[in-house]
Amino acid sequence: MATNLSHDDSQQQISETSSQSTQLLKPIMPVRQRLMGTWLVWLTFRLLALPLLINIFNPSHPDIIGGIAWQALWLVPAFVLTPSILRGRSPYALLIDSMFTLVYLGASGVVLFTRAYGSSWAEIAVYFIDFVLLFAINIWLFILLKRLPSMNNVVKQPRS
Image (cartoon, rainbow, N blue to C red; front, side, top):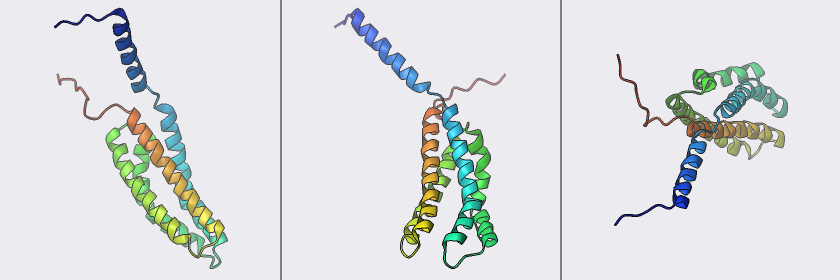
C-alpha cells in the first residue's frame, strides 16, 4: 500500500530535521570558556585559598605552607589534566577528565560531610565552596561532552 505524503507532512519532516540539526550545532566556545574559568578558579582556590582560609578559621591554626604542599600533592592528577581541560577539544580526554573530577567531587563531598560535625560554620563554608566549584566543573564537562562531535560516528578520510 503506497502512502502519499501531503505538503503538510513533508513540511513537518523538514522542520523536525532542521530542529534536530540546530540542536547539534549548539556553540561549544561559551561552555569551553566557562569550564576553563571555573577550572582555574578551583585550582587556585584549592591550592592557595583553602589552606589560608582553614588556617584563619580553624582554632588549631594549621600550617599554611604545609597545607599548600599537601594540596599541591593532592592536585597532581588535576595538574596533569589541566592542558586537556583548557583545550577542551578531545571527547576522549574530556571523558577521562570527567571521571577524575567526579572522584575529586566525591572526595570533596566526603570532606564536607566529615567537617560538618565539629567544625565552625566558616570552615564548613570553605569546604562547601570547594564542593560547589567541583560540581560546576562537572556540569560544564558534561555539557561540553554533549556538544562535542560524537566519538563513534566519526568518518575518517582514507589515507593517500
